[in-house]
Structures are given as structure tokens and as C-alpha cells.
Length: 87
Length: 366
Image (tube, rainbow over all chains, first blue to last red; front, side, top):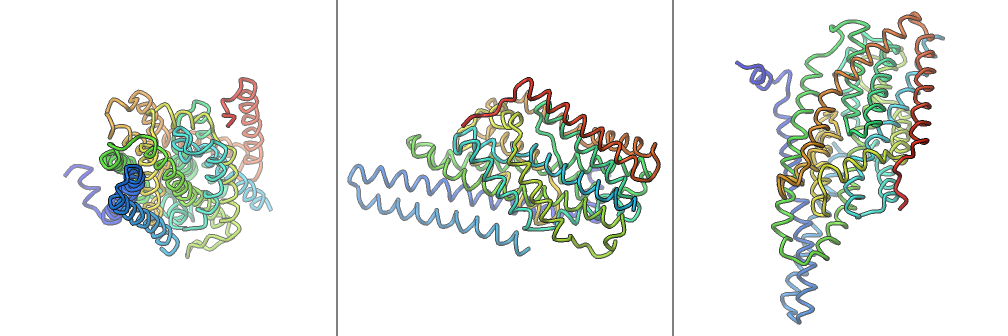
């Protein structure tokens, strides 16, 4: 068994589960934050563009997307802080 | 009485380290916001200082790791902790002088381990704790941040890539205010706790706190939070330039992705008690956000220098910590050694600052 394999397999030295939890939590949080922010920007920019070209229905749809994505973004940040504070 | 004098010197030195930690790591927190013009330098640094202060109150998991999982609290003395802190501070100042964003955390752990080995031998080093709680996370965290940086920038470009650049830039700059804030909070949470851990360790070693049942006194939390916030506000502009413009030339989407990746990894790690290098995590995120756009967008030479500094930090700080302990030991086990070394360190620090001021430091005027 290689040294690395020994380290990874020996849970008393390296808590593999906690490390994996950390990595997964980081990836999930970052993906949700980036995706929601990107969709919010997309929604606001598209809504403005649609309003300029008098496509009101499309503008409303893009606005709803922007608002919903902004909410998800804010909620994810708030949840992250809440989890940190309350362990 | 001598023990109390050494303890006071150790606490003061730990707070100086905390100050240099904030000073050194300001770049990690604000460089991306500044380089993409999401915030003015002064505003970014002020916000980072405030949130660093707030972040220090969020959790004590990392402080517990530093105080109990790196070295044996019962086997060391305040003088050993002092020597370790000197090793960390010296390494921070050396890398700051050369503009290298190395890890303050690993400097601290390296300094402590080096001083402990010089004083007691390897038996007082918790090898499993260092490996499981420090070294393995140290290797994994920048890689995870790099991967997240790549994923985040791909998502951002896929969703917003076909829009007009104006609104997208403004949107991500606004997002950077939030992601930069989270990063500052994460930095305060992870890094201020290291000083709390060291001061707590000194209090245990001096007999002021019981070795069993980990508890950080409130004055330790407040003073560590204040020191890191003041250091952050003072700012290390030299490293800000390296981190903000020399690794990649960043747009606002990349800045947002890098900060988001860094904040997510540091906050999650703080929650699980891993004393990460925030420097390495942010640099990993910045490189990921650059490589996700185009691999050649990353200046791999600069990135390579930073990686070399990472590898040198633990042994470098450990060597200085060991030499510092050896020097203090010449004067016996009392307060004389720490007093003399503190005086010498202050003189050296003032000389370096005077030199930097004479040469002129690149401080932005905005």
C-alpha cells in the first residue's frame, strides 16, 4: 500500500468523511451562488433589452427570472452565514 | 512573576502576528475587487477590515485545532510559543518584502512546530493532527478552489457570455461586493482564530487555563479580532498587486468566480475546523477562474513562484522558529530571552519599514 493510500484509508489520521463533506459543501455552495448570480444578471440584462424593443411579455419573464435568481443568491449567502454561526 | 512577563510578551507577539496576518492577507480578500474596479482600494480595504473583525466572532473550531491538534499543550512553555510566533512573523515579513502571497497560517504552524522540536523534540508534535488537520487539507484546499474557480467561470460565461458586456460587467461588479464581503468574513473566521488558538495555548502552558476542556476567553477573541482588522485596514499593497494583476488579468466575472470559490472553501473548512491557508485558497480560485477562460490566461511563471513559496513556508518558518528558540534559550528559561529577541525583532522591523518608506511604496491613491 502506498503512503498516500495508507493516509487516505486510515480514518484516524485523516478524517476523509469530513474532508469530503467540506469539498462537497464548497462546490455546491459555489455553484449555487455563481449560477444564481449569473441568472440574475442574465435576467436583468435581458429584461432591459426586451423593454427597449417593446417585448413586454418577454421582459416580464426575464424580470421574474432575475428576481427569483436574486432571491436564491441572497438566501444562499444568508444560509451560509447562518450555518457558520449556529454550527 | 517571570512567567507572567513572558506570557504578556507572548500575547503581544501573537497580536503582532495577527496584525501582520491581516496586513499580509488583505491582498487575498480585496485584490480581485480592486483589480476589476468593483470597489475603490480604500473602500475595499475598509470593508474587509470590518468584516474580518465580524468574522472572528463566528466560530472557534479552528482555534480549537490550533490549540489542541498541532502540538502537545502540556509539553510546551510560553517561551516555545513565543519562538514559534517569531518564526511566523519573520516569515510573513520576508514574503511580504518580496511580494509573495505565502500562507500566514502555515508560517504560524511551521514556526510553532520548529520551536517545539528545538525545545522538546518531535515527541511534543502531534504528527497525526498536523497531517490530518493541516497538511492534507493544505494540499486539497487550493485544488478544490481551483476546480470550483473553473466551474464557476464556465457557468458565468455560459449564462452571460452572449449578453452585452456593459450590464454583465456591472452585474458581476455588484456581485463582487457580496462575494468580497463573504471572503473577508471567511478570512476573519479562519485566520483570527489561529491567533486565538495560540494565545489560548500560551494561557494553558502558563497555567492560566486548564489543559482539559477547550475554552477561548472573550478578551482573547476581541483582541484577536481587533488586531487582524487593524492589520487588514493597513493593507499590504505590494501583495495586492501580485494577487490582483500578476497571476491573471481579471474581468469582473472572473473576480466574482475566484472570490466565490475562495469564500465557499474557507467558510466550509472553518466550519469543520481546518486551519486553511486563505492565501493558497484564493490563489487557487484566481488560477481556476483564469484557466477556466483560457489555460494560457494564467501567468504560470508567477503562479509557480507562489507555489514554491507555499512549499518553503512550513520548513522556512520552522527553521526560524527553531533558531529563535535556540537564541532565547541562551539567556536561560526566564523572561530575558524573549525580551532581548523582542527588542531585536522590533529594531529589525523598524529598519525594514524605514527602508520601504525611503524607496517609496506603491500605494494606490484612489
